[in-house]
Image (cartoon, rainbow, N blue to C red):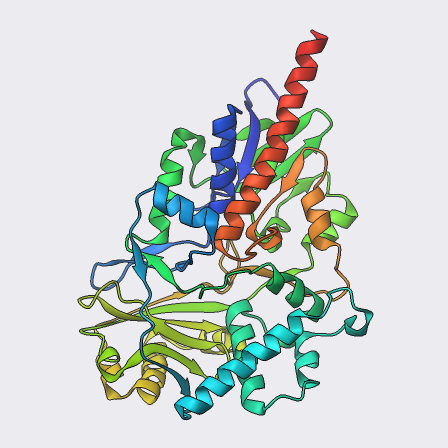
Length: 436
């Protein structure tokens, strides 16, 4: 550390909703900080791009519901317009089955989920058990089990045999919405909300500054980015665990913390927005929602902003995403369009734009909605990460007490971490003042 090094009280690494939320808390408390972001934008796993029609569309995190209080409050405070996801009409399962069969299958899958969540994560009977092994032991109809697998692999984007059952239970219990999580999306895109938050932070947000090294010692922390070195009293690493584990720490992190960061894995997801001249499915009393029973992890729903902007959003998650990412853009479009035609009829081939975003292996945030613990023995990983190390704090949606893996969880995690850091900084200032 030398006299030419920038100085601040806190450096925040990562300008996703975790980092942005933490930064706003620090601004309100009057704590000096700098927020470093590797990308040329804020938002993390929330992203927007122009499609082939010149429309600004959500290519990352998009949906929210009224049971997400922190996110809903931000949406209202920032004057965003909610678009209610169209859900009127029949839900399609493919290969096709009767409406009665489909309802029975859906309720059967939800019954499996509820039964799973009644198990205590610390129950010794499930020690070392994967979610897939547990599902195989259940005596439910095959269709219900297939639908459950598709739901889990679609939401968590990893094969069920990679996910410890205790972790899936613990994670799922923190997702507490009673209304569907696909209830709303924002007319202006979710990224517009992140941009608004960043706008309140001014030049404290520094884009295109990936952190290359973090040197921590008893007197402070030196954060080295591609453009500068910044000396700070405290550092908040607001990155997904698997991404945080790749940072260069000097000296290395304490072994338990390094191990806790290393037990996470990013899943795989490809998100696609398919635009149509009109929402043809609505005229056939269909909701546009489709779940493919023969392709676990493939799901579609209506994402039309209005009747003039008809669209289906298609999610490809888990092992299927890993297989289909090998396809060319032309082949992927043909594959997805054919699947939509099989489920919704020939009108699904009348595509006017096909925009895909492959998140697999994303350099700065991993490949899916969130990272998951894949080590069945790592029951203390979250607690170890939240405890951090002297002057080093970690936060992300994955370790949030509510809605892990969602924007809501990122906001909650960022605010909790910020309050802890603010208290530490203010305590240090008070101690220094009393001794002077």
